[in-house]
Image: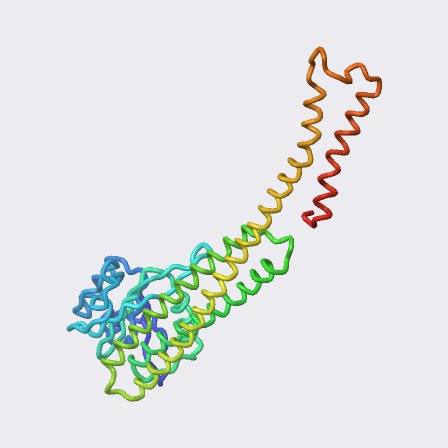
Length: 318
């Protein structure tokens, strides 16, 4: 799907293809072309109209800096990682941004919340930018802000898990471990996206250094990223602490169960010995003809079972 935006009086405004009979005129007017999972036909249309070849998904997903940040005859290329949420978990999606002299082209496969928010803000007239360089910086700045909100959500969820682990005696500790694993995965992917954005900003600083206003905005984004990276480190430490605490409480519960079985074995061992002795059928065994032998054996077994319990209680083991 192709979406087209223009800069009108300092505001980003979406323009629709059905308003234009000539696709060339639409592309020429557009300051931002957002290609969301474009079809082969849409790729061919954009490539022919702009005389450029759009990158394929495999090229966008390359991890080497030389393949993610470079300049060629098509323009300035920035392949940046964004977060997309599906089925309750976060995934990273690479977005190819091609900055040309007159327009910005973004190519992506996933449905990313940052771009939905950009469209919503554009419809409301909330995105101000005077050129396409500022538009690219706005996308990166909004990405960082969304990551900050996500880290705040992760922190709030960790607070709930912390209460369940450390204060709630009836909590499901195994479920807490599963939740902590999901939080660790999300926090790691946020950190990965922030570090990738940091590399993209460093690249833009080298190539947009002639524009002082852009340089200041980029430095401001870098400072925000540094603060957020410190926050991810704090969350990692908190997750590890809660994970260790949860596993420790699970071990304590398991030790309590083993302790109960051990005490039960010790309590029933003396009565078992007595019953085994009096259960032997030898011809010359004493007390076989004793009238009170049976009740005496029962009382002796009960007393031998109660004695270890009293001893353990006195020692404080129960």
